[in-house]
Amino acid sequence: MWLLVLSYLGGVLTIVSPCILPVLPFVFARTGQPFVKSGLPLLVGMAMTFALVATLAAVGGGWVVQLNQYGRWLALVFVALFGLTLLLPRLADRLTRPLVAAGSRLSEVAGADARPRPGASFLIGVATGLLWAPCAGPILGLVLTGAALQGASIGTTLLLLAYAAGAATSLAVALLLGGKVFAAMKRSIGAGEWVRRGLGALMLAGVAAIALGLDTGILARVSTASTGGIEQALVGRLAGKSPSSPTSGSALQVADKTPGTLPVEGNLPPLDGAVQWLNSPPLTAEALKGKVVLVDFWTYSCINCLRTLPYVKAWAEKYRDQGLVVIGVHAPEFAFERNVGNVTKAMKDLGINYPVAIDNDYKIWRAFNNEYWPAHYFADAQGRIRYHHFGEGEYAESERVIQQLLREAGATKVADGLINASAEGVQLAPDKKEALSPETYVGYQRAENFVPEKGFTADKVATYNPPAQLALNDWSLGGQWNVGPERATSSVPASRIVYRFHARDLHLVLGPGADGKPVRFKVLIDGKAPGDAHGTDVAPDGSGSVSEQRLYQLVRQSGDVSDRTFSIEFLDPGVSAYAFTFG
Image (tube, rainbow, N blue to C red):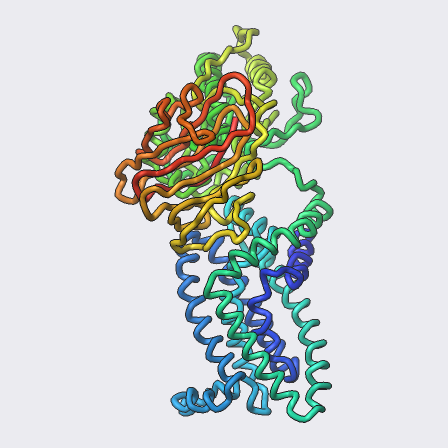
């Protein structure tokens, strides 16, 4: 119930967001007509279409985004014609002659006819919903992310409808007030005609803004800056979380979880639903009774997951003969991590030989109500979860839990000592004191701190020029890139990414072009070859290549750490960049 209220209030706030400016003229074009027969059908069509497109995006992913791009262009053409009928009634007569036989005159849609047409208003609302769908705030992102991880459902659609209803409410209030102003102006001779033409001009301006990508570029960026704080405060107030609540990879400390008490947290959920099992036939919670079980949720390009693996592997090896079963649940974050071949190769490279369930549909994830990468759940021999830990760290505490559960299960020779995991390369523990740069996504869906302020041109190739100077944790693109929801793909040689960071290590999740050919790159730090500060995937002269979809370590500094400017230039086109992480 609280989430419904939260989504509704987030929708209400949409009207104060500059992001919605381009579609406002489409709504106010109904000003001066009866609200029930004109404005209301438009708002209903807008809200329903928005909720439908957003729901499909949560279920279908990228193909829905591509399909909606065509729908947006069709809607733009339709709305542009509508704007012309408001601006130029004579032109409207000529444009609408072929449609007379079908009983649909654009002049009637535009309001030239004194009789309001609910069906026509609803159609305008459908077009407006298509145009509005790609541009919304943090609360909508929260809903869609939850749908992707927890599973799209009727509840997801209800949340989206609540968000759309909130936006429709604030627009309805504005429309009713605008109607009173319009009615007053109509008392002046000729004023109504000029207002109608003015709305037509504004509609054409809105069409131009959307066609140029301003709604998902400049205005979306300004929108996030102006309303994001309000929406995040609502998230904190209504959901009981602060804006800095743990995200993927963050450790969550839970009371009464120390060894010695280990309360029962519930039964081990079913493990069915995996699309495939690696290193083992399918396992079930029932068949695992009598064993102590550690379930590790991970994904192979996640730096936090990679840094916990040396400990998980060491526990699996040390306690296997004493009754411990380690199960990895691979729940993908990026699309390429759904490829079982990619996961199989990663497991071989990482030396993982315990059972791994490929949870591409998040069925096991949802059964555990999990929210984090990595997440560790410890179950006793009776099939009850007794402890859990999210994120990195607390390895000694986790190992003592394993020892206690093994003793409870009847193991007689459980070692008291703790493992000393050998970690190197990307798996080396981070220098937390110096890691002042946050995980940063390159795709526009979750990108932050991108400069210049004009933002991205979404889902199309555009040219970018990075500024001469960057503030700490700002980043930019150079050359030609196609920025999608979860990645940016270079279109020409010499395209680059620049990031001003402060950390010992810098990593970047990368993938080669669609043809699979390696993409050569050159890394610079403060304009020079990295030398001794090169990462494991980079030579001292800064050269390297992207040959597979994975996380690449590009910088590993020794000695003092300070603010540095990182630059990577891709000598060949086609590379995909997903996310920066630091250590």
